[in-house]
Length: 276
Image (cartoon, rainbow, N blue to C red):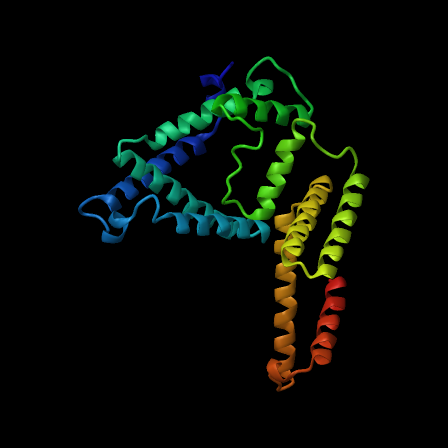
């Protein structure tokens, strides 16, 4: 496997060296914060205690990307990198590994899993590339199932899509999108039937099947269920706040408004949104 040589790396401009120096400076700042002369709060932190903040920063990065806010993304990527460096510093203190070890691991992995770039296995088809990637992961990690490795802590819609993608990588998939549409319709019918019986357990199961089939449809349409639902939530929130604001302009409290009145404002905002 041919790794990037020094000549290729030398083609990078001065920004590479500057970025490397800044990364080292950040690592030094974190080490100082963790030292006896550092910050009491930072010194108290553990890998576990930082997880909620790591997750929050990850979602803030996602939010800035979704909003196409470059300034926010610049800041949030730095915040996320801080947590990566912090976790690396904690691991180093415990003698487990260093951040350099993590960087080397990911570099080796990228080179190894891209034989069409760094080796002699050309592949222009992205499907073939994905299949090779998954096969390499299975072999490297000694996994028993192709479905292994998808974190159970992922948001459910994202986890559903990743499991579907993994199954698809070995050919277990619908052949055409019409089949997926039919499956969605079938699952909705089964949900209706379960609701007619009043069986709560059956309703729960069938509702989950509907959601799973919709995620599958989104995958075929190259749409993210998580992103689409997030967008729908944002749209609902914006319109509902619009109802509150319009009622306030009328001198009314939303608690006193009728459903018909709120629906009227909602539909007007919906129509206005279509013309934006």
